[in-house]
Every structure is written in C-alpha cells, then in structure tokens.
Image (cartoon, rainbow, N blue to C red; front, side):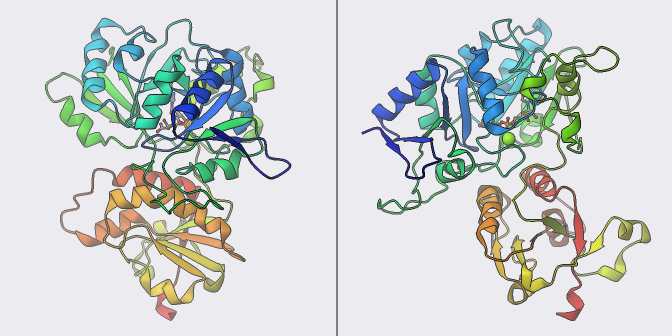
Length: 421
Ligand code: TXA
Ligand code: MG
C-alpha cells in the first residue's frame, strides 16, 4: 500500500510512502490538479502543478496565504528552468552562472516568467522564482510529475516552516492533500527511530535572488541556504554586485487581498494583488511564529550598560521565568536553565549550521509544553559578537538564521534581569 488514511474524523490528508508507488501516486495527483507536500533539503513544500491555475489557487486557500506572496516553482534540472523564463540577454549569463554553481541546491532565482505561468504564481508581478532542489526524493517526484511544481513551505501562513512530515500533518492534516513522507519517524509509528531531521538537512529555506540585468545587481529578497558570501564569490569574475533587501512589513490582514478578492482595485484603480505583490513579497514582520508569545532576549548580561535610545526599544520580560521556555545557542543563556519551565539549545557547540538545522523543529517543540506563556529566544547575533568582540567575523549563515528568529519573535525584544538569578 502506498497510501494510508489517517484516523481522525476531520482528517483528510493522505500519507504517501517514499517508494515507487508513493512517487507514482504523487505524480498522478499533481498532474490531475491535487496538492502534494514533499520534503526538500530546506523545508517541506506544498506542491501543485505550476501551470494549472486552479491547482495553484488551492495552495493559497489551503495555507490561508495572501495572493500577494508569490510562489517558487520547482524543477528537476536547469534546462527545465530555462523553459519557464524569458531572460534578457544581459542577465542570462549571470543567471546561468548562479544556477550552474548552486543547483541543485537551496537557491531560488527570480526572472521574467513565460506567459504560460499563471499570474497567481507570480503574485501578479510577471516574475517567477525557480529552484532545483538538492533532495533525492524531491528530484524523483519532480521527474515523475512531468510538470513544474509550484510550492511554498507546507505550513499554515505565518506559522513555523515544516521540517518533518509530522509538522505538515499537524498544520494541514485536515485538508485534501497528500504528504510524501521523507526518511523520518511519524508519531505512533513502529518503525525503528531515525534521525527525524535527516530529510531537511539545511533546515531553513532557500535564498531568493533576482538577477537584474539593468542595474547589474543580484538582489537578495530573502536570505537562506546559500550565503551572500558564496554568491559574491561566484560573481567575482563578472561586473555584477550584490544587494540584500532587509525589509520588514507589518502584517495587516485588512490590507491583504485573499483569493476571493482577486481583481479588486484600490481607490486609484490599481490592482490590489499586483500592487502588494510588488511591494512586499514575503517580508512580513511576523513569520515563522510559534503559537506561543515569543521574544528575543537582548543584552542578557548588561542591562545598565545600555544607551537610553536602545532601552526604549526593549521591555522588561513581564512573564515569570517559571512560565517561560528558553531557546539557547552555544550555552549563552544557561544560567536561566534552572529558572525556566524548559530549555533547549540549538547547538551546544555554537555551530550556526546546526542551529539552522534545529530551529524550526525547536520552535514547534515549544507549542507542546503544558502551561508555557512565553518563549525566550537567544539573540544569536549577540552571542556571536560576544565571542569575537574585537573582530566580529560572522558565520556565513548567521544573518539567515537571525532573520528567522527575529521574525518568529515579530521583532519583539525583552530584557531578562539576570542579576537577581
Ligand atoms: O526553500 C524554499 O524556498 C522552500 C522549499 C519548499 O522550496 N519554499 C519556500 O517557499 O520557502 P515560501 O513560499 O514559503 O517562500 C517563498 C518566498 C516568498 O515569500 C517570497 O518572499 C519569495 O520567496 N519569492 C518567491 N517568488 C518571488 C518572486 N517572483 N519575486 C520575489 N520574491 C519571490
Ligand atoms: Mg514559507
């Protein structure tokens, strides 16, 4: 049997095993307009045939995602990507250089889409992000599908991204989707325990970059699995520079058009979806957020050393420590350990890649702790700076991990007075 129905009455999701039967069923479902969640080296994606407008729309309704957030299209090889793009000749060589260097891998390249890609995929912008994932099962599924697969992360909109099939199931199990299961153990299964994270080895999403031929710039929309320094190195022999956008847009649900509002125009006659799609693709201040109030701990060791300006941006943590859980890095906050409800370290040895790998699973772990009121996240930047205060050489993935932790906390920072501990 390649599929198993789940037990709950409200559950409609189907699990597909990572074998030939599961892959055949995934391919058939995708070609006939269904949704299939699948593992990649970054996070699980929720896939649909990218050329099927109705299927693509069902991704947005299933996730509760606004139409202003464009989707990444997944292909098994670079040749397939080039069929979906109309690259201007000046940008084509750099696009191909980046693709050849980093694919298969966690880099999404944005370029002008061919007409057959529905506008819903591009959030009305006409530009599409394409990625070729470096994951065996994802590759096999994409080959079996024989269609390009549009896929956002397979979580509820705004929630923590999923790095296991169980995470997908917890968020979207009551929807009509199939979940192609990577090599991992699901709750209630008898199979020998495996490393549950092995399928999403990178653990954070792909870097999203646009090659802009006019300004000769590679614009980074989202930091991720391929670092800016690696891209910079790759561009060394070209006349292109790199520019990272650091936008954070507060999520205002009243301003975000939903699927049923497509076609709506504002007071000046501008199409709402297109306008917002261009302004703020995926830059929400609140993103990756667990269902428990979350804040970053700042200036852990030196409250009185703050400048007045800085202090205004912070609040004292009002929740009693025995109702908080701490997510730490490199043991920086370990004096809090015995005062809080629970504690986990993303990497005891202070390895940023290991922290990336564990981050989303750890954020979700906090949701299952009885009585927890507040998640306190370490400020990973502060930890890294404290290690090398004279010559701050940050790890190539530090900014990508810090960005996710900042958005998981909606930018909220608190001070915990450790003097009294
Ligand atoms: O690693 C990943 O990228 C995962 C796996 C499944 O491939 N996918 C993923 O998709 O993270 P999603 O939808 O959760 O995030 C994609 C983000 C969007 O929010 C947006 O910021 C950016 O990529 N993006 C996609 N297409 C774009 C475009 N045409 N222009 C600008 N940004 C785009
Ligand atoms: Mg996402």
